[in-house]
Length: 287
Image (cartoon, rainbow, N blue to C red; front, top):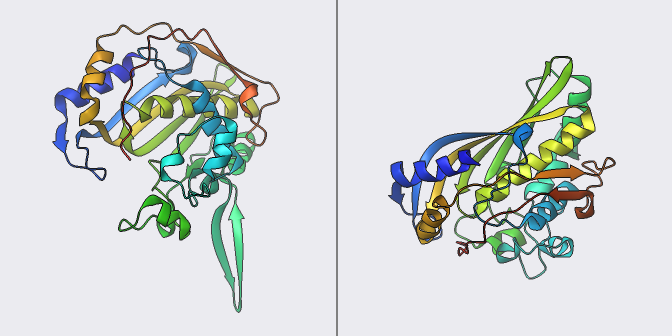
């Protein structure tokens, strides 16, 4: 995971100190890209222990199309609780956008409310039109963005997203190489908490890439992580420096149940093999 360490170091040395929504303050650098080759191992950070079970639970939750934090709790993670209503609602966040994008079609006097499953369309295209340059999933719906004058839970109560999506758009690309189809995934993330959030994001999208590749007869190739505002919170600087002083270890691998799909993935279908990280480094989340 030298790529991740290089990104941390680059932001520390070249970034600009700036304010932010949470009032914590960050060191920020705009416009970065890192590439992770899954043939070299599963890209789970080893210089601190990362809660892989929570990553898997969250991805299962997204794939279900769920937007309620209590359902995520049932799957084994509490990472969205701080922004939810008392009933656990978060509004139409990632899962809703991925699996049930809302749109309307006007037919004269009649208006049809429809829902579009972006991930199901990804699978169709990769099977039927693998050379397409349009295999894209978007989480950014301007009509549903939160009102910045209200809290996340107040926005969710009004039917808006509790938080605007940080990972806003991702694209798959298939290439035929030496008679086999290889699949890569690029994520555009508008805002990235490098210490706490990005290790989750890298592993989550690498796992999604592996799942989709398995479903469509591809070899999982690269996860490309493109970031808009890459930042380190000021209350994470000491932790980042501690992490940069550690030597990365060998990457683990992930085994997926052969029956796993975007429609049925559960945590027990995912096995992490050979993960031997350094100890955890605590950091406070900025809400």
